[in-house]
Length: 492
Image (cartoon, rainbow, N blue to C red):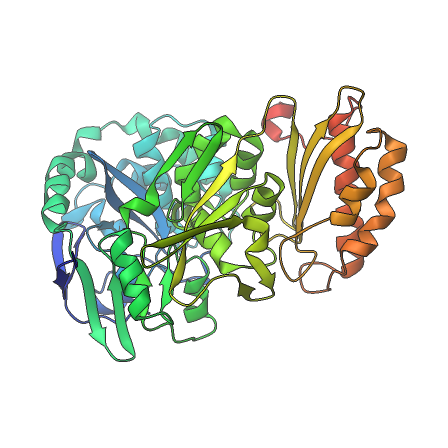
């Protein structure tokens, strides 16, 4: 049965219902707020999701709950907001009333310097305060990974974050007072219809279900599919690319599910990094640690694991980590599905094994069995919120006599696609897991990879780093004392 079609985009902005019948597929939330609604507390800094000056909260219903997350308005498209609640900094203290505790703390503890980035910090801290009223310093720093202060006022901002709850007045918080009302209003907006706005070269679609998505892409196989827009957003803001017709899939509920059956985790293509973090951290800790280094909190709230795979970038963080685990990928075209090994999805630079009208539906990730050694190591210029130079993932099974029964090694940033180190694997398999075996296998890297030099790293550095990651993995799994990163919290 075909989905009903609605030619309106519906959402709530602060305390007002919004209905739009005409909006461009590449209109960002930031531009719309500033230019169409004159809400200029939200700033444009980098226009690529790095600095956090544009941070707003977006609330959505998850089951019976209402969940608010900080997002980068500069790369969030309007078409992704159907049935959501958008909250800007102006809503914290409406009608020029008393400052919200988050705002007052920033004033009292001198957290605002030039002030340009302050609204973004306020909104990130507001989101943190709602989830954790008395956060630890670690939680504060994690929440602020995606917010940059060019005046270097971080210590004052952290002091402000510690003090928020001391102001009380929780009952006056607008999102606390309005929560039941907002849930009911969002439920009323969600009529289960497909949204279609515009025509010709200015058209976008919000599918009603996964089957509806299949039908839409069969009819429009060249459409740009947008999940979290953490990459597609830059196509617009930095490259001025035309993305119409656009299909926004962030609201497709069937793509937002995760389950663990018989030791295999199935992750829907629309599951964000933030949604997957706790689940994966419990089952495969190395993946949780990797996700914590992908972008800032706003990027993790928007970006999806399926989108990171479908994008096909050679420096995408998740594919090599999942390839090393032996993951498989389910693709859907119309109502027909096929499942392939994830490593076979990547054919060449910019080319994936995806037919016209076909989309990534889910990825199946085997949980390492007891005794398996598994690790992921990311190399980047800046530890937090930075793009990968190279990333190595290792999955080792040792036989009872200490020889390598099986090993899977996958890298990102070393070739035109995420790629396994097949020659290195062959050089290690069946051999004793010893330092001499590892050193004897190191030259095989030259057979597997011919890395490039770019702004992130030279070819020579990438090759040396890749080899050293294998050495590090050996140290970590052999009982030898391996160098570790000590945080300031661990050191204290």
